[in-house]
Length: 434
Length: 176
Image (cartoon, rainbow over all chains, first blue to last red):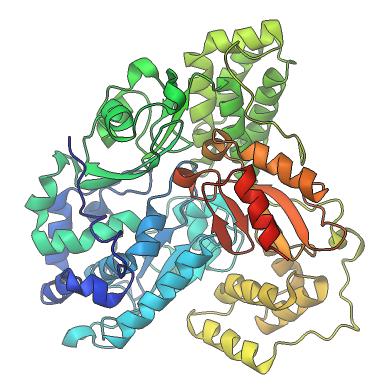
């Protein structure tokens, strides 16, 4: 399969972040077209495109929009989730920094479709300081051209967009954590229901969409749902950005129709495995996704196929590990992340992620106990599905998959108090908290 | 979740310094007013206002927390609670150059811990503790969303990608 350049069509052009650059490739024509349609018609078109959310959950975008109740008398809000923090994910940053108008145009059309109040927000992670400055500049350009403000292009629709910087918390990528954070609170997820579509930010019905998902809206409106469905397979449609990192020769963001085979992506497009070593494991969808072994990677990168393979496409953050990787250390590093990022609200997650981290830490450091592999699986049973959001379940992804699929390596650590020969310790410095 | 560092001034100094003069300059106040316009209530302006305050005072001592709380009709204890939830609000003074090394999986597999260790060794600092001249602070951080160009080191607001020890040392030369 050949790579495509649709979402990434502009990113290598020197003026790609400017409104002139964007408009010279037909930018904002989809907005003009959409504002002449009824909001209902736009929702229909987006539903017909079968686009699924690119943030992690893969929920159909049009269906999400359809949940928003009209005529409640409350302001309806559109929020762009630009809190890209899933380990191994770096696709939204490319759109934000190099093609910000694609996101902005997508947001204006989306806001119009859901009858948004005159203010929408982009919640961008605080570390993306440069990205936030690019967006601010792009928003100013859009205001100057009349694409934002009062009575946009004579449609009677008013909208402005505010860039809201987060302050360093993974959990704010969870949509209700994001909403709490936008309201000026600790970003702790809410009890659901009510779902954000009914009661979201500032008490109003709220739609939270990922940056890449929103960036697809202009092309769906411009070229039509049928064209969009031409990429990928039914229910897994559209051009898709894949982030490949770790032990490949050519890491980076790749764009393909949503059914590129994982093995082909790694070997034919990313140059194969770093140092020409053997492949050991692949995480197909960001740090939360269960690992696949090298025998399991001949699978198309669609939401459904990866789920059938026992993992998840998530945010399409593909992390590749060659056979120099100690799987216990790799899993420990992800668990350290989840333990650090647990918001502390629900006991199973707060205690469980920290306990998981400490058990992986002791195994990796030669103090593992014979019962530890079973203990990890038992702990995971008592974390998964037992808290308000999916962070605890996410931590179980690397924990359970590494123990189940690399059990011999765990047992080797426990028996020999050492890593498997041929693997190396990538954690060469032990300063800091641990 | 951010933790209160044992060396945090908050441990000993939870009361605001009433002698300190804490006030937005007219120029900063104008920016603050602009922030308020973007939200339907004052509380929602808390995160951007804290970013603004940190830009001015470089960290958020108790007297600044009280000042920000006053501006937004919030309780200082509430604002303190929000600050401690997030990583990016400095609960203590940082060095002039705040070096944040991502060591999450993709960066780790590309040698991030070698850079992290070398940085601490070269600068003779403990992680999280400012260098004696106040110039540098080195910490390990979670995924910065730059895994395709790993390892990445964030220096104040800027990302430095595809790093290695040589490039890091060359970068240190440029930070004075």
